[in-house]
Length: 309
Ligand code: RIB
Image (cartoon, rainbow, N blue to C red; front, side, top):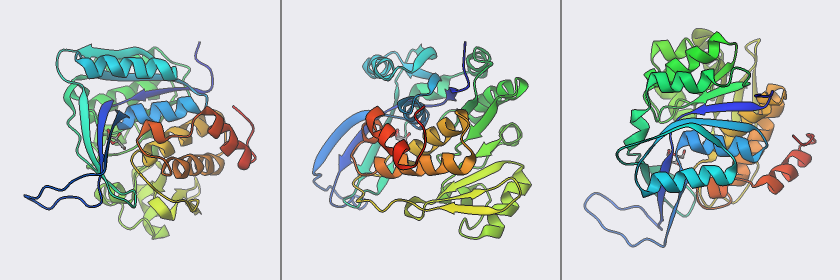
């Protein structure tokens, strides 16, 4: 039976193909990179893995291709202990993401969705309905919004919280927004969904009221802004760290914030835990490989004065 820290993630899984380079090429130019790393990514799967590393029971809903990458991904989920009962394998290619990372850790990402686009609304709803006691259902924008909307509607019908990370940036469909409880964009996504300037408290409060969503905006090195239930804005600063690769830091935040809410932390404590995990992740290369492992997660929790679990 699902317990209070069961989390359902409906979303993408990509194979990340990361090139580390001193500088990125101009149009028509070829540059020589320093290093290459292949790894497991996709915003949905990354968030699932981060929540799992912190101890949540995580159920993934998504679609992989019937290629080598798809099988490798199933093995990766198994290694982390993410439940894949509702991960479907379809004819075709698993999603891939070529990524460029510069020395200061900034990244540029192209996603080619492949099988991620083939998850159906019925499959998504069935995956959610299989876990009526889950605390949270998380979605992003790397599968069709209509599919996430069905998953969120199924969650709402049993009183499960829904949390949307509207990434990569795109306007939010009305049916999806209507079924969303928490919105977690970064600053670029916040602007693209009509929020305006996330450093302006009034813009944050106004947007939360207009969308009727709880709102957290991630701001990279500037930390996060959290709009409280009463409309007041609180800000959590980021730890000062030496960034080598920021890929997946937003996903580390979303996965750990969800875990925090799922185990009953208040939203400020959940945001502090999430900020610590995201900051820690940028100090290591890769996507899921950069996330704090279970031992480091325990250390981070202790540093914040949080109990294990
Ligand atoms: O947020 C980082 C992720 O974006 C990468 O893992 C890549 O696959 C894309 O989904």
